[in-house]
Image 1 (cartoon, one colour):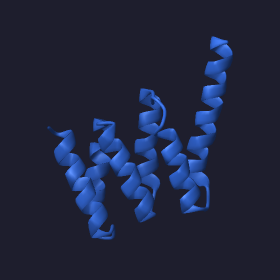
Image 2: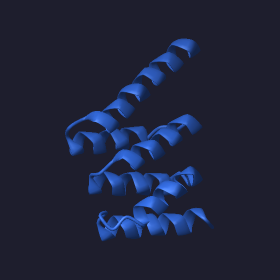
Image 3: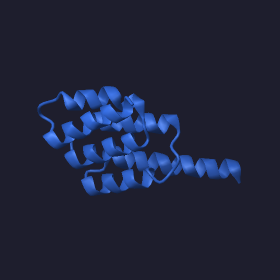
Length: 107
């Protein structure tokens, strides 16, 4: 069962990450993020979340990803947080959340 269960888990996570990155509906992408957040994430999956944040332009998804990465204490997100914080085209609330994340992750 271990190999089978691991294979099924990998398949599930691949589908969730694909949905998180590609679905046209922001609500579906947010639901995928919520589902991903219910599992113990490997370092590679955490890095995928960082990469997903770097590519997202929807403010609600950016906020949710920043929040999740702060919860995970994922320091690899710091450069992305910095880029978001310094981008004047990003809404102020998202820039403020990224700045908060930088402070928390640097503690």
